[in-house]
Amino acid sequence: MFSGIISFFKKNPKTLFLIDAMGALITTLILFIIQSFFLSYFGFLKTVFQYLILLGLLLFLCSSSCTFFLKEKFAFFLRGIAFGNLFYCCLTFVIIYFYYSILSPIGIIYFASEIATISILVFIELQVARGLQ
Image 1: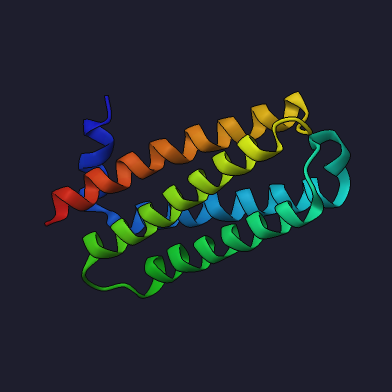
Image 2: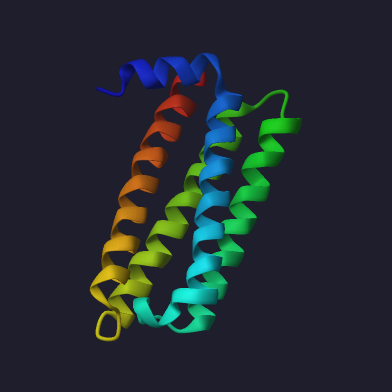
């Protein structure tokens, strides 16, 4: 199922960094909008959103830097970005676990779908990194 996608990104690793950067930027913007206007619908504390926004912004900066400046060692940096994304997913899961009692259903659905989407990206990034060595 993913073999064609992985083959494409092995030939175009900068495109994968760009997709990762855009995903991190979109996540950051969505979290900022939720924090600013819809926080009561999600049931999270504002500080929790602020930490996730900062982490998303950091991941955006890392991925976009790789997109525009990286000339070699793509596999090494893909692994780094993948583990950064995995850390974001694990942190989000831990936050859901500890704040489950105050989270709204829409909050749980949003963050669970975010974890699922990012996990697929992490899988692709790790497979591409393995193929680039």
